[in-house]
Image (tube, rainbow, N blue to C red):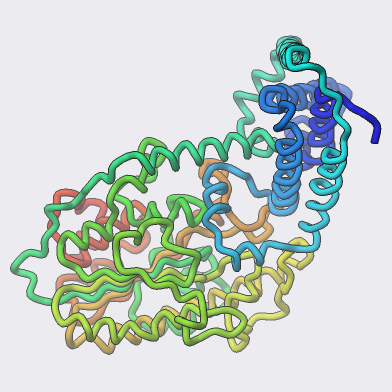
Length: 528
C-alpha cells in the first residue's frame, strides 16, 4: 500500500467522517439553513470547521502507538452512531451512553438489522481496513512531535479564522440552534461518553447519602398494606383506550374500578434516567445537580420503616434502584415459567403469592418491572393470542413498515399490558381479606412511532416530543383501603402529575411517617 504520513491519515479519516458519517447532522442543518446561494458559504464553512475540530482532537490523541487503534475504534463506533441517527433520529447523549452500557444482550440483538450491518461494513469496517493496512511513515520522535504540533496549531488557527469571518452565522448557530450539535458525529457522542464516565467515577467514590432513616409506621396503623407498583416500559398515555384512544386496548382494565391519570409525564425519555427518577426523592429539575445513584431511594426508606420489599424484573435490570433489596430476574426460562418467543411479564406473578404467604408480619411492597412495549421489535412483546390488530410490523427496521403496521404491533403490546395489569389486580383481590391492597402502574417513558420522522425514544427532555414523555398512570385500590376516598381521587385525576409524585405517593400508600415525605407531592393526600 502507498505510504502516508500520520497527519495525512488523520485528515483523510476526518474528511471521511464528515462526508459519510454525518448525514443526519447536515440534514438537520439544511432544514434550518436550506441549500441556496445565500447559505452555501455558511454550510461549506460549517463542514470545514467541524472537520477541523475532528482533526484538532485527533492530532492531540493520535501518536505512533495509538493512531491506528484510535482511528479504527472511532470509525467503527461512528458507523453505528450514524446508523441510529440516520435511521431513528436518535441522539447519543450521556443518558443514551448509559443505556448502551446497561442494555442486555437480548435487547441489543433486537436492534441489529441488515441496514445496520451494511452501515458498519461500509462506514466502519472498510475504512478501518484501509487504516489498518496503511503504511505510515514516521519521522524521529522530535520531528513527529513538531509535525503534530504544527498540524494542531494550523488547524486551530484556520478554524478560528473561519468562525471569525462568519461570526454572525456562528453566533446564531450556537445560540439559537443548540440541538443541531447533538447530531455531530463523532464529537457529540465522545463528549457524552466522557460525561457519563465522569459521572460514574463520582458515583463510585462518593459515599451513599442516607435518607428517611426516621421512617416508621405509626402505631395507629394496625392494617397491613400490600402495594404492587408496576414499572411500565415504553408505553404511551394516548394508546390507552381508557384515556380516549379509538382502538380498544384496555378491554379488561375498563371493567375494573380503576383511576387513570391522563395527564402524567415522565422524568426522562430513557429507562436509565426515568427508573432511578421514579424512586428518587429528588425532582426532575434537580437531576443535573444531584446524583441519584449516590443517594438512598424510596426502597431504602421503605426498608428503614420495616417494610418487606421485593423487586421482580422482566426487563434488563433495576438501573441500580434495587441494589440493596431483594431482587429476582425473570428474563430466562429457568426462573420464568411463561416463555415462548421470549419470557413474558405474566411470569413474574408465578411466585408472588408464595412470597406474600411467607411474610406473616409487616407491610409488603413489590415492584414489577415490565418488558412492556420495548422497541423496536414490538411484535415480540406479546404472545400470538394478543395479536388483535393487524397487519403488524415484523421488522426491527421500522422504516420498512407502514405507520399502520407499526401502530398495530405497538397497540397489541399495550393490549398485553392490559391483560397483565388485570392479572395483578386479580392477585391483589385474593389478598384483600388480609391486606389493604393497591396497584399503582406508571410507565418509565413513552415512544415515538414515526411521527415527524422520529422513532423509539431517548431524545433530550427539552427537545423530546410529547410522545416520549406523556405516559400512562393507573391506580386500583382495594375496597378495604378505608383511608382513601376513591371519589375524591377521581376528582383529581385530570391534574398534571409526573414521576416526581411517585416517591411521596408510595409513602402515602404505605402510611409511613418520615421527614422526607412531602404531602403536597402525594397524589393521595387530599383523597384521605
